[in-house]
Length: 265
Image 1 (cartoon, one colour):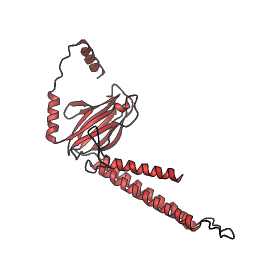
Image 2 (cartoon, helix red, strand yellow):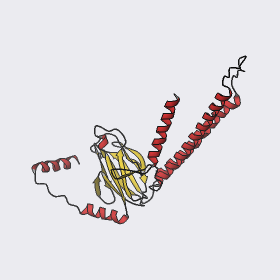
Image 3 (cartoon, one colour):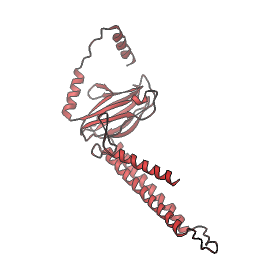
Image 4 (cartoon, helix red, strand yellow):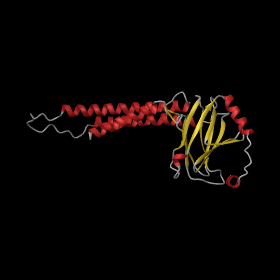
């Protein structure tokens, strides 16, 4: 039992180290605790520090008390009678009821404060509509009239408000969950329902996004790339997207494919 518990602790610590260590997966930044990437990460990182601090305190107190009792009251072989029997301690029982309650209330208060802070809309934020489909993502820049799929381009330092849904209000899809792991938390993409989440990217780079809710056979393929770029580069992207004109298909297969895409959208 002890070996199994130690093994679980080692695996937990290894997971935390890997989560905190900046890494690369296919060229994408993977670091959920990168405090420089966004205010969201800093807020969640602060909460994590409180929770892990309380968890460490409880672990030390419980383990210390258990070790003390085990050593002090262990059988020595010199006993001549049964030890004194104890049937409860009112002070101790009150203490181990009140202290966990206080810890939970503190964590609740900090969490509620962070939730209200992160859910507060920022005036002037750029709105991006996010539509989840089986099995890709649509990103619509409402202010610019630009639509892109599976690649999200964001300007550094500018607040972005995501309006997340499943399908487009006419054609519905299954439930997905939109998350950019290294920048912001998850929001469900529910058909017929619009959920919101906001972030201000503060660090230029490539990030990794993924649907984090099992949505079908190709769920693992619902990855997308997020590029945080300077404002000038973002402006060039918008201008290029507006100026782009797709070539008119001539092959019969391509013509039928274009007709199908126009039909479903």
